[in-house]
Image (cartoon, rainbow, N blue to C red; front, top):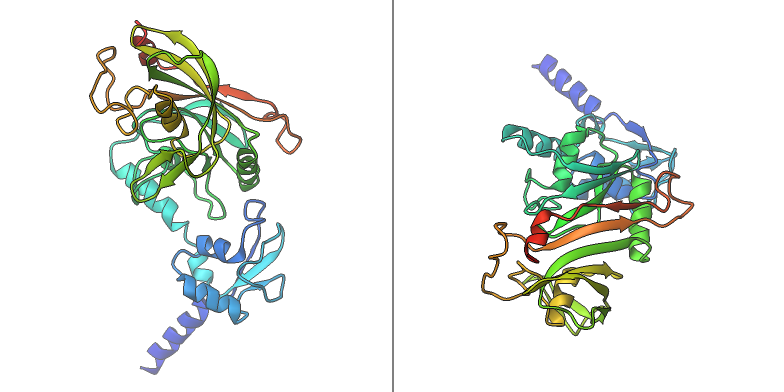
Length: 327
């Protein structure tokens, strides 16, 4: 009995042996508590915060606050050595879930660099998973890259609705992710869409400057109240019932293109949420999609970007189904 107790005591001491890791460039700039939550998924947040308050977590040998921003190269000591040795829990669950089912189609690459991956999202695919292990652009990316690092996971810069197609950006490191999100918020990324709309907008080009407000409960956006939103449009081609238009989203509000076009009387084809409720898609055999396509993304010629991304514009070819409406 004494021998058994001694073994259990030794095991307990081993599990509590302090662990030390060096903050990577991908973790730099993030809050200490959030980095720890990602590295130690089995440790409750309350336990993490308690350890920080009691000084069990040290940054470069000193006490720190949970909200403190970390610097690349600093050493962080924690009491959860055994936990950190496991791969990140969410990554394992996603990749294993995908491999248990029929293999998901690979993402179509438009352009890929060391820092950024431009992919062409098909209609019907979520940008982010809506459930644990669910299929989406980002989970396919993790699976395709066989991502196992626990300090960072590739993440989307922006998103597209499920039934919208087109080009998207996946940041492959944290500095690029933070930089591009700042560019997005400052309006430095040029986002061009193409859409099939009912009728013929008149004038053939102009601006739609209508505020938008999203109701989180209904996931509906209302025009005429809320945040400022600006869309520039230009008619590219016309048919008997529909027109092909180009849209520049100067701001990036949820459902902006869909609500703005509906607000001026030219809703996007296939949009049952903001367009006509009746089905009127005899011009195409394609169903269950919104005929809105993220056509191009243009990055600024900014010195903070890697040289191979400065001033780059990436284009996703317009699906043939869009042309069917104009026949």
